[in-house]
Image (cartoon, rainbow, N blue to C red; front, side, top):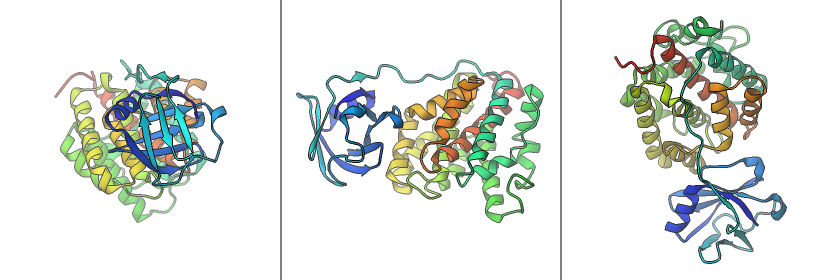
Length: 335
């Protein structure tokens, strides 16, 4: 196997730790447990990952990753190869990552509200993800600054409208949906207030909730943190600080509360590390239009069985909070 690209974190991890083991195998990725991290050998369809090594597909026998779960893997720094049972991954000729995606300097509220509407429609069409039905309660209407205010009243109408209901959303009231909606209200209120401890108190019990290799609520939290991180320069300091407090707390708690793969994503997020798929979708949501918006959103939604859809709920939730903050006035004015 020949590597074509390597994330900078991976190079650091390899220099610090000489050996690991095979953690898990999937069609497009092979995860290696490496100390407290996961290193992911990935085919191009998985995209660039903040803890990943991208492989030339011509050098990989699809569906036949070498070794099995638990098998040892070692790093040969002289030969620049990962030695796996029955195979080698050669890293010497790979491009080294020099720069990760950067936050946006400014946000256009009118564009974001239109983009959130598009995101919601695309996610609902997929009918996947345990949290996607909650999008029907976002009360999307209008456009421009007025529409943004209607959509993003985190401390008023939007937060107090109760349970999502009605045709095309969740239908008859569902106690579990009502409880979930109330939790999202608490989450956005704490974030909009810039209250890091309250944000952590609401979010920590969500860790590990849901099914799959990356539980649905973990995906939502990841999407929420991504929107705040990429919109950071346009937001008040208190919001950025609260979001980082949340990211750090989730990264610390995740290893004992959720799956190893989900914990890995959350730990990378706390360090500003995002998958190419999530970074592209978030940047598009906050600043693109037309095909430049739809293509990356669809690519995110196609990820996993339902992970992309649940992550999209987090992106929408984060965008709602951002729009609320921007509609209040100058984003750099502190109370």
